[in-house]
Length: 283
Image 1 (cartoon, rainbow, N blue to C red):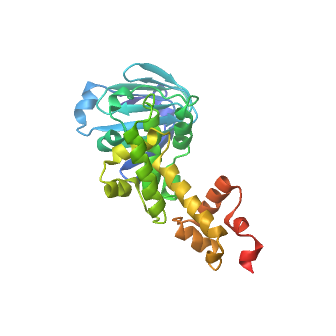
Image 2: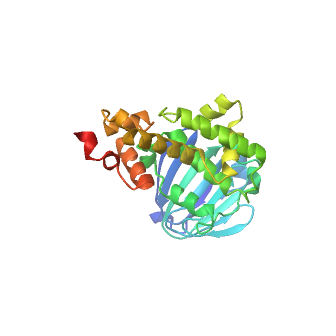
Image 3: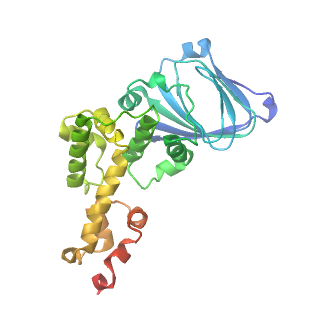
């Protein structure tokens, strides 16, 4: 792309980036500018990718399959093979997720339907997607308390939920959703369990797995967390496991980080692991 600024002398920009599996997460900050990606710039690039963008603090203009004014928190998916013009008239702080084509195709049956269509921060699943993306930074990703695959799955599922109206669940979706739930319950103690592991075990595609869960407004990440909390609750409240520490029980339930285990228990059960065991377990 080409970049110009009405105040070139004071122009500045800072980019920090890291990888989230096959996804690249970039946090861009700087001063006002315009960027263009037209026929000449498109001819310089052989790579095809998608970009999921959200501005944390500023309004900005986008010409990409239409003219759009985006507010802070609004999300938009762009296609690197489609021309764009971006206008930013103030200091900016933007999160940019570079998404491989194969990854996007696994989540969206027809990505072109979503490209260039702003996803409002204030409507439906857009609220959740905006909140997740706005919190992302390379620093957060580098020290994320959950496996990168789980975080990437959460983003993909939320993107899919925003791709259009969800059709009523079909019988096949219900059967697959139930099978996925059963497998998650059986294997939730595996700390690095991913959706691809479950899909391979069930001999289905990963996109079919996510579609079946999405039909019920569920994601793999939330289903896995629910199963782990259920297992941990059983272990914490059973006298058979009284000799195990809370940390050991957390590991048995698939949690690799004790702080994450405590927060998840408090959020889901209203009590910490220690509070769930009570004084008797520490005698």
